[in-house]
Length: 100
Image 1 (cartoon, helix red, strand yellow):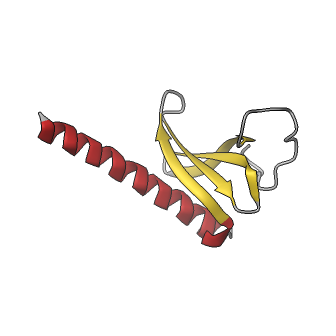
Image 2 (cartoon, helix red, strand yellow; image 1 turned 180 degrees about the horizontal axis):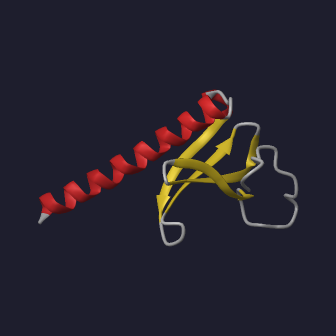
Image 3 (cartoon, rainbow, N blue to C red; image 1 turned 90 degrees about the horizontal axis):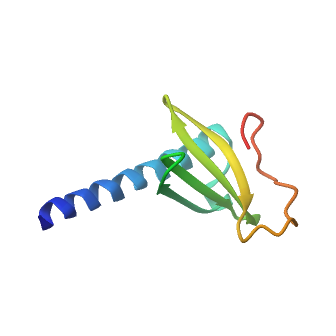
């Protein structure tokens, strides 16, 4: 039983790591960012969307941008304040034209 749980945990961790790398690759090769501009990138598995990767940019630590991959395409689908929403965050620096 422990082997099955360990294998499942390892698979999940590997999948999240793979998604993080794919999003970083997308942002650096297709969107022109450098890795230094990316403060934090992490993938979560939840309800809807099932898999979501959050990006926080170094020059905008008070905002989160959400990315996902569908049908082989990566895109930004939303954004939000990094902390509790208080209505003060109204301008986002890294919105993509087709997302957010």
